[in-house]
Length: 543
Image (cartoon, rainbow, N blue to C red; front, side):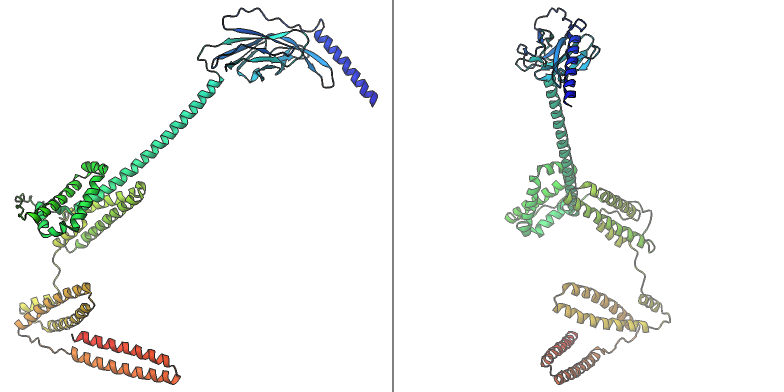
């Protein structure tokens, strides 16, 4: 094995000697000298030796771009893996192959420790052994070096040519690209900010429009304040309140409105009646203050203009058949109005127009259709309440009741017995007694709502009873009948007391036999409450 290793080393040395003779002997390709060049002013030419020594350029101006042109070929050397040196010919970017073609790329030529292929605008012409690239000056020298240690004096040349000022170099290009990216980013940020501001402005305008609509609706509901006669009478009847809480509330609303200059500017165009409404109320406060100090009666306003000509007859009329249809239309008008108010309030709270746009449009379209449809029946209104009042006025009178029809027949002296009228009068008499008892109970409970309902029904009962009684007396029918209510009530109360006492005695006897004294006391209290209720009912009926 040792002899084989020695033999391989000897063979490698012989091969190295043969290759060295081929490269430097009479048959090796000779380096071609660079052609003579006449350099213009500012252009610098350097020789880069194959020995590996560094060559420095002059100081390159900061920001100026220079073109580097490498030319020529030279003999270079390298080391083998198992020892020995071999020689080859190379230009600035390629070395020769086994048949002396410059086709093997290398990175032996360094410019400030960088291969020329790493520089910008790298271009090559292997046929002429000419390679070009660019660098940007940094206010210092640039060095060139070949990674070789050939003993001969061959070299490569580099011509440094300054390009015109303004030529974009690598640093300037990167800076321009960074500036471009920064500008694009800033433009995108500005666009996003503008879009956000636009969205906020849209929300603000939508909220403002909703607020204006609410204020206009409020003014419309209180449109009597635009009438001078109404304002004058209001001052005379509500003067003290205008000088106290009501006047303070109106003044606070006035100041809150006119402190919002943006809203006032919008109202001048979209709702001038709102501003006029608040001015009228403020003038009423001032007039009330003046009347409190100088009580002078406000002069009467000029007479109102003559009423306009009545509208033409409606295309349809409200009859017993169409009453239900018109009533249903008014009910739908109330529903659409409530929908509009509800969605407007929700829009003012969440400020999301898209979420309520569809329902608001539907409510507006529905109200418009209902108003237009009601005008066909002679109902010309601008609010659901006004439409309902007009409907009540236009409705045909109700059909006569059975008793009214019976009275009409008796007046015509038809052979009809008056027994039904007598029974109706007695029923009304009994109903009156019951209603009076219930009314007294509602007075004790201080239930004004129940009392008002009972008073209304009592009035209806008394009117009908009076009419029937007068008619029966006119036709000589006796109307006297005994009131058995008190006797029946006393008997009923007596029976209830006896049953209550008997039941109490039986329960107490049973509990006493069981020995449950606590339950006995509770049962006694319970029956005492029931007895008190019986006496309270009796007092209500005899009040």
